[in-house]
Image (cartoon, rainbow, N blue to C red; front, top):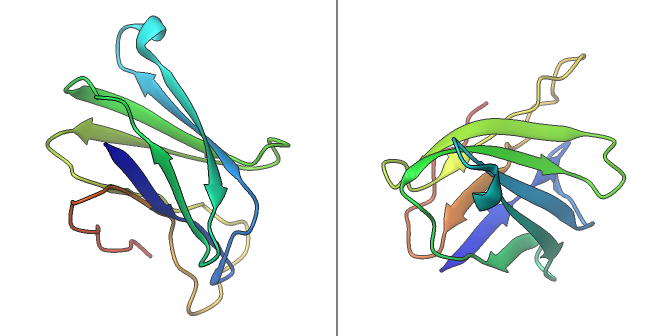
Length: 112
């Protein structure tokens, strides 16, 4: 499969790569780490191996590990996940949340 993602900060696409860590709910040996590089339009994608049907902890962070987004994803019950940062200051109007969606799945509605 293929993982498609959109990552925004202050309403603008993030232009640097990110590290995606899918943490298996019970077996650390099944954890998956992917490096996602942005395309010209600011989208992120990576080849995604066949996932076990389970609850995954999702961690997304920049290469310098200065920030992290985290959430829980129950695959295949959820076809996508939207993650929001918890800002220390109010988020400006028009900011979007990052969203991960396997290719061919409907995009999740952004959570604000």
